[in-house]
Length: 419
Image 1: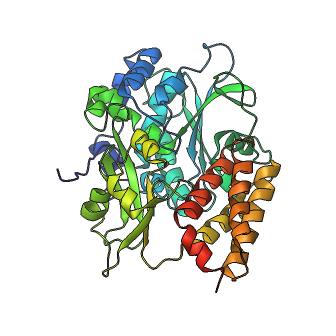
Image 2 (image 1 turned 90 degrees about the vertical axis):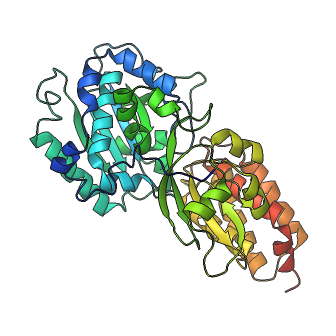
């Protein structure tokens, strides 16, 4: 069966001036608000639970279950924090929403705030996204002027929603939700220790929920059309759609909304147009730079959903497929990635701070023809030292990508020993 594009989140992307309120209103934006406010907040959460909506920022955790972690409403303020810190190499999907349909995100925030009974939302955006930040702020200003947000939602519902855009300082680690919150609070962006049991996040010691931009943008369709409109796509365990990004030497690189479960090789060939200029596929990093690499043979078997990726030994991540052609040095790929992670480690945990730098030095040594078998073993040993011994998942993610490259392309590392 041919791979088909699905238009839920991306429905208005191709409409001229879709980012402007006047055009957005003509094409269905804010249509879900009336229905949402006719429902009880807990009923919206239940609808999201039934939809099986999963977080699209990399982890894939159930969205509805996360909302249910919020404590009962009391006198304390409650917050929704939207993670737009899209700093993962190979990932460039959330910025499509900022650029082409920012009012969809605002609509999703309003509905989600009503479900969570939160009156204030923060959108944390990657600091380098200046152009996208300006466009989003313009849309928020339009929404305020029209009375869509502010003291009364849609100028009629006795519920206030205020939205603040917070521009990050350029630290990759602030994509981790607790480091993101620390950053908004004005502290250094260091991840927090996790509690033993499941609970909500805490913003200035007040209850908060953190969700990715695309996740929140998926909520209006679910509320307006019912959870069945979402579950008719995808797989049983991963229902719905996702914005998949494709970069590298394919004929049609870009961002495409697809249902979960499509075959990766079919997506590359049919949607991406296949490899260009007679190149052959060598490998794919499937979901942004921190996901274990897949060989061309593994790509033939891979499906774009969380469970299938886990079974094949990788992760779906953010769906950012990085296509690598034959002729590319995998040692150079590993060096490029570890340089990034060495630079971006926040330095809070010793295994991560020292491990990324150590691996970086070793791979540089191998590229210069001064390596040995002992160096490969040291890389693998350091990877194990980094795994599961740090506060956040930064180090384990680095371990995943570097270890997978070394193990699957060890012969390329060894080729440098005699050169």
